Image (cartoon, rainbow, N blue to C red):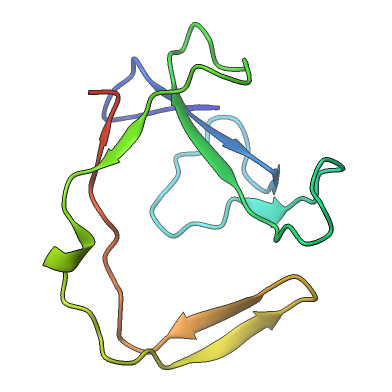
Length: 114
């Protein structure tokens, strides 16, 4: 878990990643956090993925109890490209990663626990 700089009363918990970061590191958007892990609880058809939770600092580890995350804008409000082009940067049995050419550069703003 990492304390959120914007709100020190919240922690961000990221699961299913073998960390390449250390305690005290300040994370930046787009920074690599680590390698995706395959939990023994995943079915063979489950792609590697992460879970992100926003939590109270007093309760960082429990399986339930994270804040609900809600989108602040509708997807329809964004300009959608008519096609996506890109270059494969990684190919694994479970997934591929594609670096997109000049499209989808901004994520969706979200309201956390409010």
